[in-house]
Image (cartoon, rainbow, N blue to C red; front, side, top):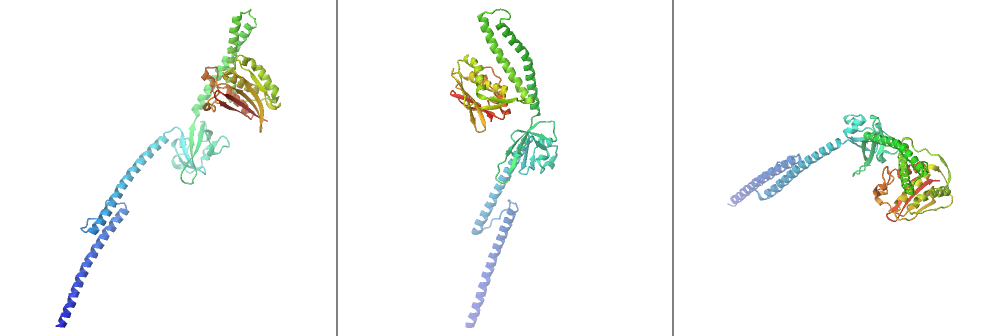
Length: 423
């Protein structure tokens, strides 16, 4: 009986173990199946298929994991759609920008620090005589020549010669690209200024021709006025004399304007030819003051010359006198305070200085950089005669001597023009 019970117990134990093993195998089989589905889903996502999802399983633990993975896939899918939309928009904007740049009449190209071309617009390719992508990687100096020794990186609206288009005039401007990497790149803007130069030349030729033709009758008029004032044609009354003197003054101003225009044109065509000589500065300036004081007296202004030691300067006497007289004339015109005009001389390292100082309305700070520009005139603001060429011509004359004219001004206080001539 005992033996029977023992055998029965062993049989029951084996049956229980068999049932447990069977259940465990079923469970592991489900786990393996589930892990297989997860692996397939992950691999699909990895290769870009974001439409794959894990099938729902009626098991609390598995279902939570399934929902989390499916939500992650849906989020990734939404993100991918947004990225695709952003990429499409960027491509549209890029094409629009490229179309705008390519349609510009100016040329644009990008180079690296070795001057190799990285990108160009069609206009540049046409000017350079290159087609398609063959220009990329070539050196920019294969196509251009700079008018002087200015480094390419520092070009600021500088004239350049394009070998394939020799009959046109071009200016070039270089801008350094600021990017996050350490590579140096430069954007170069090229503008064809052929038409502008031709129009400018035609305009100046016309003005010079017209001015030259005007000079003859103006000089004739001046001679007639002098004859009348000298009584060549008979006596004149006091009123007639006053009228003739006013006419003579206006005529002299007109002659001076015509002469300035002609001199400016001559500078561009042939440059300034200087006849330099040694000049003792104190007597030279004193004589100029004596000749201009009568003009200043008409405006109630006194010119004071305060010399330093007697300095010898090498310069063209006639041209330097013209510059100083022009500065004094401007000072008289703009000294509306009936105050004095001071003229001083001095020395700074390497230069001799001549300063003309007035105490009139002054020059606004925003206009100080413009007053030496061609045709700029402060006289127009005050409805006075002026071409705007006087200061431009004066600056060119002093530059031809190796010097410059500088200006400092405080409105309604003082204005100082300083001529600097090399020793």
